Picture 1: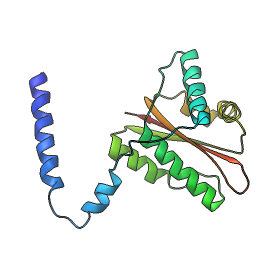
Picture 2 (picture 1 turned 90 degrees about the vertical axis):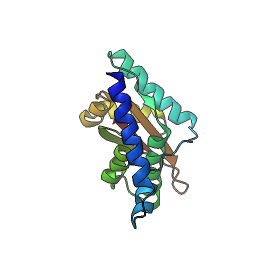
Picture 3 (picture 1 turned 90 degrees about the horizontal axis):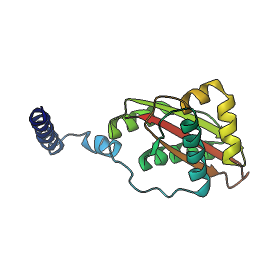
Length: 166
C-alpha cells in the first residue's frame, strides 16, 4: 500500500513540475496566489491569544491548534485592510479562505474578528460569549493563525483569528 501511495505522489509531482514549467498568461497570478508566507513575527498579545484558545480547547477535551505563519499573515492582511478602510467586517473572507485552501490544502476555513479590546483576554471572553465565535473556537480544526494590530490613529486594536482544518 505504501508503494501505491509513493507512486501516486511521484506521478503528482511529475505532473506538477510539467505544468508549472508551461507558459501560460495566468501563471504569474496562480503562482502569486500559491505563495506561502513562511516568516511571521508574533507579538506577545498574539501569543497570549493563541494560548488562551488552546488552553480553553484542552479544558473541554479538544485538540490544540498548531499555528501556521501563512494563516497569521492572511489575518494581518485583513487587519491592515480594516484599519486602512476604518471598518470592522469579514470583507474578502472568500478570497482569504480560497488562498488558504489552495496554498495549504485546507478542507475548511473559518474566521473570528474583534475590535477595540485592550487585551487578549477581553477579545477571547467576547468570542466565547458569542455563539458563532465560540463555535469557531470549539470547532473541528487543526491549525490557526492570528493577527492583532493597533490603528495608529485611534489606537484601537483589531483582531483577526483564522481557523483551518487540514
